[in-house]
Length: 336
Image (cartoon, rainbow, N blue to C red; front, side, top):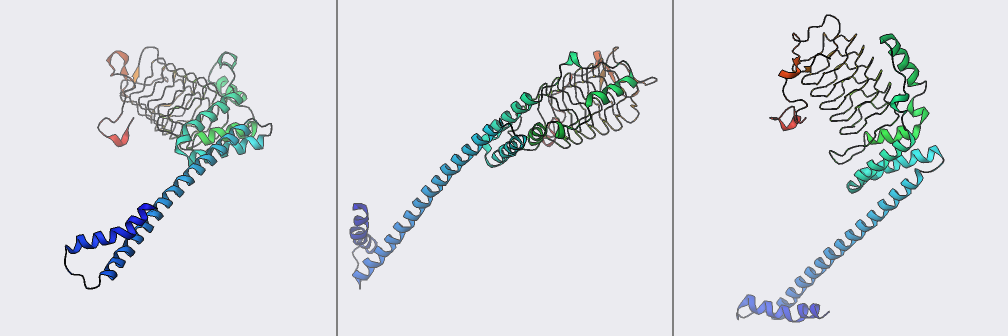
């Protein structure tokens, strides 16, 4: 209050005297009143700005509180016995991730844990073992089951769908190892940097998906649809890709050592700099695949009559370092 009195009563006279420097002012009272009015308007403007700032702060506090309440409520609902409530909770968490950048990593972790808890895959040693090409096709059909994941476990399908499209911190690893996602529909999902080792992705649809640097070691991808998916620098060691569709798939610098690609369709697939040591490609037509710079050894099983050297495949001892850190070191827009 004293500051206001000082500005309104004393400051105008001081400012007038300082501005005129002793010169005669015809209407001194009017000049002082004009200065006083200007100062009061300035004070009012400052008060308005201060008020607006504190209002904005209060709105932020309220917003954070609401987001926290929404997050807590959604997590609690994930444990509901009602599948409809669990599905609603999954999409509520997606909304939190969209609205709050700070909660995105946590939302992704919660949904990964939910999927792992509710869709644990059959252990590898308990899964059927194909005897030959024809039998592998039969095994895949039987093992995939008759129902889609969205029918079998709609809440898990919702969780994985959200993980594939909701915003999350760049480079965050999605921990989905050993999950059962047989016959799931995840076309164009963004699962880059996910850990899916030993998962069961039999007959999964991942057309056009972003699977860069994903860990699929030991995973079943039998009869999977991976057309035009991006699998650059992914780890597919010992993966089962029998009868999989890999038309136009980008597998550059991918680790496919000991992978089984029996009867896979690879028209237009890119295998440049891929590690094919120990891989099995029996019954696979490689005529339209790009293999320049791919690495193989004496344990690689090629289709009958295939000339690996003519296709640009390098023997392991003559190959450059496998899975380079970047496929395009000179072009930041095409990071590996």
